[in-house]
Image (cartoon, rainbow, N blue to C red; front, side):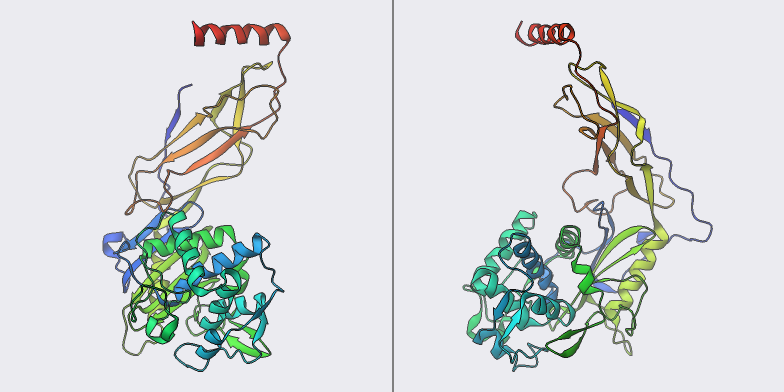
Length: 413
């Protein structure tokens, strides 16, 4: 079947929006990237592929593995966690900890909250020890997960992002005394995207400006949240990071114009009189994205694309209409002249009757020609499942027999 191709017509510029083109916008940070989470499309980048220190942003990987352990039933939110001497002793160092652990026993839920809201390093280490038995073994899990996501240029030496100097004799075997975790902005975007798409419940914690831990109030390090000094409406995450090597860094996320946007700002430019440089840079980046990109629905749920059909073997009908499993949306740059296209391809494994409505029978692929950097943080072009619009009953015996005979002749003779 021929692929159906449609050249997309670029949306008209909004009357109130004046796009700022990428070459005219320079985010105030050494490294940055912005992506739309659901599609994985890169919307902006600046020196985004160089691995650099990321400080406490490392905890996003740690938290992902905590949620994974919860999903696998290895722990529950109410599982008690004993605080070993290693993370407990760090609580006496103001450079390493901002949450006391005097009770020496807390639940997974309490430690997860402390890790995400106040960026508590000892809480993160305690969780890693509970899940893997030691921080060293947990770091091995972190490395394996990054490789699973296709990230091969990372340096991971601990669960927290602290400089090894602070950890004393507890550093990862083979690492240097002043090593820190390193990822590129591109890699961080992949981590953040995997976290919020697989475990969106994390946002219920990261959107809190304050929380309670062991009877005390803890305050978020994300000053873009509601009632915080650099508040921007809609921000519901995600994680800050600060060390001497990493500078002031921030991974933010919000929904603007229907797009779930993830921003990564690493080593923000410090500004005299502005203690919120990373948040100011993030807000400027979001302004750029909002004024230059829009989400477009190309096929609504339950509708076909250009009368797309897929062949059906041995059915009373030879084809079935393929419809969108859910709304199919793409992100487009306002004013772009790129000749992007959409094509429908039936499944390579031709479905056989009886066929139930809702069965995947093909895919709609978006060939995006307006790319920033590598285009997408996903490996493949955006592809969307299309399903059978209705049931297709099996044909009468004679037709099924004849179809089988024809196939045998074509394949064997």
